[in-house]
Image (cartoon, rainbow, N blue to C red; front, top):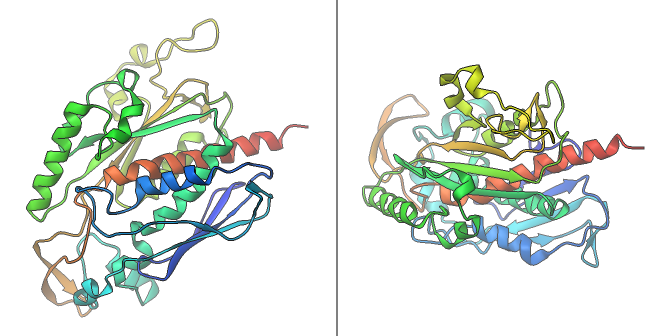
Length: 352
């Protein structure tokens, strides 16, 4: 499936080393004045080559809109857009034409489709996520009252222990690792650089905080708000886990400690529910954490197999992220915005 969303929908296309990636956004309300510089800003946060701790592939990621916009405003028609691929080095993948890289999609794509695009991983590449950021940037502009702030909360065994209420989100973009705490941020950067020198990779987590969400977003059974957020986050390349509110830590608590007791105005004294109860937003802050595995491409020798089932030795080539979490922050925000807008439009459709 290449389409995400129910009412606000993105259908994307393209491969890592093709001429373009892009998509069609359908269901966007008309009359929205778009800030194109803001859309490009979001893409710049995700693009490769932006710092010393990410892949050095150089892409401008300049988006070109093809339809659905007139005189700077949305028309309600499908919004078509494309982003050129400018810095492909397909020769870096010639050595794996017949080889399956460990923990990559090479093996499963080959078995499912019978053929795969080996250049940069083809459609399985995280290059695809630039399309999501375009759609998410538009969704953010339709929901300006909702504040969505994601940040890197861990790299390897380095954790930002401060609760989000004590953080200044404006400092997130001042750090190349996108951690809003200067002290732990510097340690994270050093850790990533050390791992990169070893030809290895490392994982981490991204925490997202969503504020000013109205009560009532989400459906009671199969379209619970947290379920849709989880589906979105689990669609991101390299994601291995999702938890919201108290998450797995809640399993260690007693119900008497875990329950969010109400105040008279309907707010709660604590927020271990993570702003969602019964699958529906309750007006409190929504917060969740997304776990990313280490990047699968290593600059080290590894034993694997080829298409004949023979054991072979291989080593990664090309330009790859030693840790994906710094560039994943805008992707997490974009998908969150798309999910929320979808539910806002659904709620609006029920009004007479």
